[in-house]
Image (tube, rainbow, N blue to C red; front, side, top):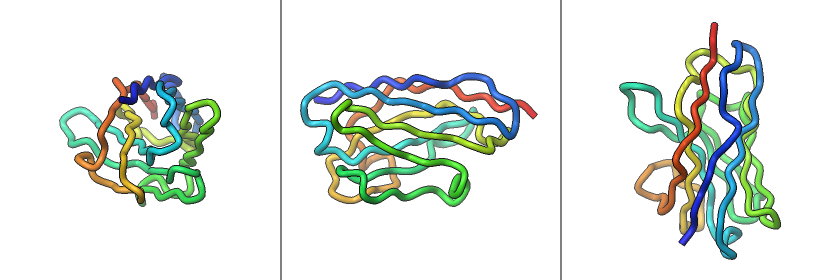
Length: 124
């Protein structure tokens, strides 16, 4: 069982930056692939990016590639999402999620545990 708690969301102007954190409980954090997803009002939850268990590989959605960076610290049971050059279309609730998969998957059913989400609002 893994419990996930996101933090770091807020209101930022377009072009600004935010860093989201996701704190995980449990002693097996390092055995999970971690992903970040987001959901805007009226839209489906979409994959933002993911990181392998040992942090040696990350993948990103095309919409955030080059602007967002995922990292993790297994010693601290935490995963991070650094968001730069934010755009109004990045406005959404952001979720971290844990998957028992070996590889980074991009679909929501592949993830076993979810946080409650944190709101990110980017003003124009």
